[in-house]
Length: 126
Image 1 (cartoon, rainbow, N blue to C red):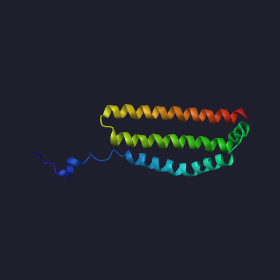
Image 2 (cartoon, helix red, strand yellow):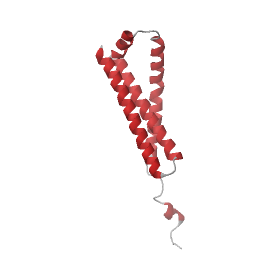
Image 3 (cartoon, rainbow, N blue to C red):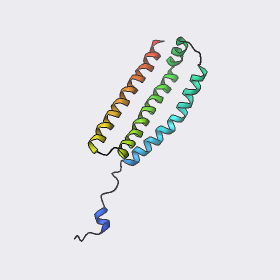
Image 4 (cartoon, rainbow, N blue to C red):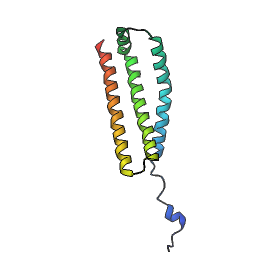
């Protein structure tokens, strides 16, 4: 039997103060993705039927390349944050949770780097 009150026993077991940052970053990237995705889709629809040279010229414009890289970074970061939440909620063995989370983040990072490299290669080829 302990002389500590329920509040004293619970104190210090609450939030690690990290969830709020994660939550905010998901919301910020989601808000950023709305105009970026709308711009990207509208641009692709406007470029329908364009030849490779026209697409390369479009990507080589500094504003376009910057927006494409912003879209790539926001997309993969948002996806990694979302997958982390899924793993935290549904993967039970803690060790497996860590391995899967790290593997996912490394995979998304590799895809993001490859995508950014592709944009830069097209941007500087023109």
